[in-house]
Length: 99
Image (cartoon, rainbow, N blue to C red; front, top):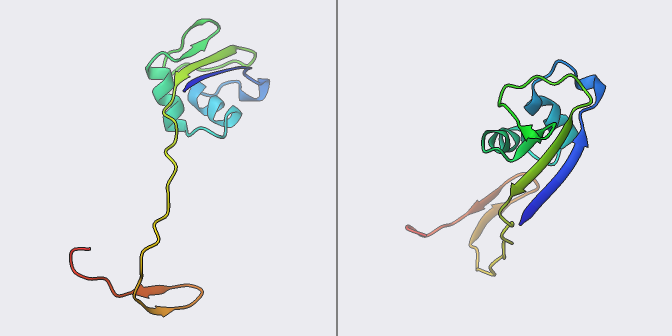
């Protein structure tokens, strides 16, 4: 999936590293993901490939042009469980060896 986003760095982020500022602006993405995008050249700062340790002043234009993998949906399986004990905080299962 191709991801494209643009934003202006807010003035209150002045003096921060680019990855820190972007983590605040894009809370849906982890800081490590943002750092990967910066290192791979998928984030442009004022039209140029951003440096990993760039410091922002506020007002800069940021473009994200990234390829991300689509999430794989987890499908639950209906399997029998041998429940020994269960309450609101804990569950104890009897599991056969190797399973």
